[in-house]
Amino acid sequence: MKEKRINYTQVVWEITRLLQESESLEDALRTSLSEVVKAVGAEAGTIWAYNVSGDRRIYPSFWIGGADLTGMSLAEGEGIAGTVVKEGKTTVVKDCQKDARWAGRFDATTGFVTKSMVCVPLINKYEVIGCIQIINKKDGTLYNDDDVTLCENLAMLAAIAIDAKGLNLGFVEEKKSIISLRNVTKTYGSGETQVQILKGVNLDVCEGEFLVILGESGCGKSTMLNIIGGMDRLTGGTFIFDGKDYSHADENTLTLYRRNSVGFIFQAYNLMPTLTAEENLDFIGELSPNSMDAEKALESVGLLQRRNNYPSQMSGGQQQRVSIARALVKRPRLILADEPTAALDYETSIEVLTVLEDVIKAGTTLLMVTHNEEIAKMAHRVIRMKGGVVAEVTVNRHPASAKELVW
Image (cartoon, rainbow, N blue to C red):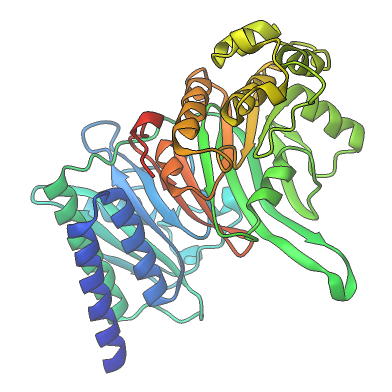
C-alpha cells in the first residue's frame, strides 16, 4: 500500500506539471485523465462539463476507453454524474447496475457495461463546473480510499487550471448520427495464420463532422475506414449508415453504397494517367446519379485552369486536389481520406487541408486517417485507436484552421 501511495504521489506531480506547463490545456486534461485511468487500473474515464449558464445539462468533454459518448448528455441530477454535479459531492458506487441513480440508457446505447465507479465533482472558486468519472477496475476489485484521493486531486488540479487558463469547455451541438459501429470485429486468415485486426470497435459519427483517426501502425485505423467505405467486410458486429444496416450486405448493395454515398481520397492519388484532370472527374461522375459538373468541382479546389492537364503535368499537391475534386463530383454524404497529406511537403499539405476545410464547412462528413497529430487540431473530434479498439475520444471545442497548423 505504501508503494502504491508513492506511485500515486508521482502521478499527482506529473499531472501538476502537465496542467501548468502544457501549451494546450485540452491536451493536458486528456493526458491527465489517461494517467489516472492507467494508475488505478480502470477501463474508462470521462470528464464531463456542466452547462450551468445554459440548459443546465452535463456533456462529455474527454473520454478514454469504453463507450462512445458522442451526442449524449445528462440533466442536472440525472444519473450518477448528474447527481454528483448537483450535490457537489464525491460518490463511489460498487455496483452501478443496482444503483437507482444509474442512467442505464448509456449502456443500452453503447453496449458498454458499467460496473463500479468513482465520480468526483469539478469545483472552481464559485461553483461546480463538471465532474470526473473513473469506471470499472480491470481486475474486478473495488475502488479504495487511495484511488478516490487520486481522482479528487485530479479534479482539484483540473478546476484550478481551467480557471487560471480560461478554458471554455463549450458544449457540442447535438447532430444526427450518420454512422454507427457496434462491437465491430475483423479477422483475416484462418487457423494458425488467423489475425484479428479489429477487436470490438464502437463508434458514432455525426453528420457534417470532421473526425480524425490516430494510432500507431497496425492498430486497425485503415481497416475500420475500409469497412465504413464498403471496401471490406466486417467479421462480426454491426455497421449502420444513415439508418440502413450494411453489416452483411451483398456485393451489389455495397457497390451502390460506394457509388452513391462515399467519396475516397488516398495517399496515392490513383488518378488515371491517360486521362486529363477533367476526364478523370467525368469518368467518376458518369457513375453517379447526381454528379456535379466536372468544371465546377475543379473550380472548387482552385484547379479549373488545369482541367486539360494530365496527372504527369501536375505537381503532387495539384494531383491530390484533383483527387479531392474527384471525391466531390459525386456529391457524397461521406468522404474518407487515408493519409491524404503523407506524400506532400508542409506548404502543399496546408493547401490541400485548406481545400478540405471548405469541404467540411459545406456540410460534408469527413473521416481522415493520419499519423500527423497536428492535423487533429482541425477536427471536431479525435479518435485514438489502440490494439484494434477505440481507446480515446477527444472533442475539440475550438478546431484550428488549416493555416494555423505548424509542423
